[in-house]
Length: 477
Image (tube, rainbow, N blue to C red; front, side, top):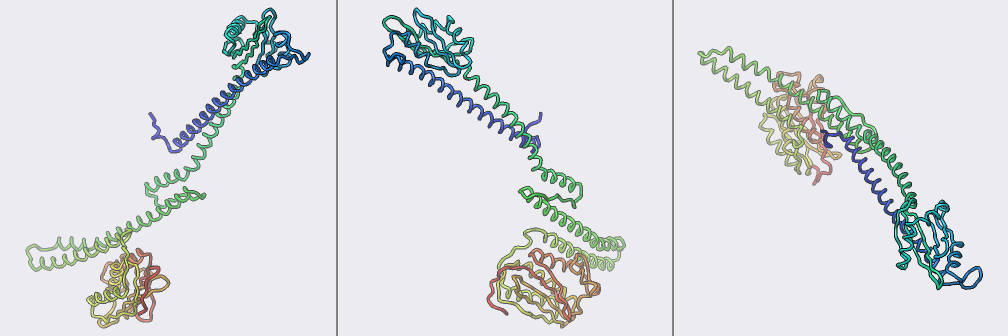
């Protein structure tokens, strides 16, 4: 059996709207019915009390308006009152006298019904019973429906009678019933319209969600290029843009990781082949050959270890916690890097420039990048060549560079030196895997910056540019 939680979101929203609308309409109808019923009861009571009060007023005054003298009999009193009164709708007035025929008045639509009603035995018994007890009010059932009967006895020295007001409460309520039936029809149509509108609008509002579902299914099947159409200007539109941005990052990360794995597999294949080949041809009985093979394999294992470490470094660069900024003193940073670089090779090391300032960067990552640039410069320079390190602040950015006086970078290598596993054309000097400058670029990009290659007259200058915002400057060096 289908439960509410297994229904679609569109169906659930439509059902909830339909139920709430139905509840609101029912509550409104019931409230209106109760209020109107009470109002009708009050109106009926007030009307009947008014009739009795007017009769009592005329009786208490005791003056016949036609003659200006006192009424000569109860009959004359009742006849005068009846002749001057017009019953309201659903109302009848009766005057009954001992020894005289009663007089009957009916409101609109009841003129022909008054006399038969007044001559019914049940009605006469009711009037007689109430007159005997001094008058009162009761409710009776009649062919005209339920009726409220008010009896006011009237007597004089010669005769007795009763003034009777009858209100057909059932007919009075029939009008309310007709109104409520009309309300029910209108409410039912309104409920259907609201439910239909909720169904249609929910479908339109959830259309981006369905597109997300379709796109997600296509992506799950391997099509990472799929994107959702952005239209409108609402919360779902913003959600669509956010999901598209997320898909862009996922596709980029997937392609980057796939390329990294492909390149890593290609680069690892060579040392693995070397290891396998030497192990297969090694003579276990030749100690010298075993020692030579051991040294060669250890060297290949060291190269593979360095390659794996570089690959892990590039993979970690995609993580949000790869860079952990803190306040760093540029003078201390550049000075520390220079001291570490002296162990890389016998070159002429110097600091070009460095401001006395504190910036918010990841000092360890920038140090790692500068050491990589310095190591790269050492590989492409000779003993005694100049390698300079510098830093400066400009336009809310910090620039770090490593400059050398070597042969420079060949024009054919400038377009791809920062790509993974791409070595320079001078392979006699470049024995690495082509990941060093890629790591430098990844560190710069993790800071929100970039790496650029300057074109000096002599040698090469590689520059790291990262945004730092407002730096705390103590002075320029």
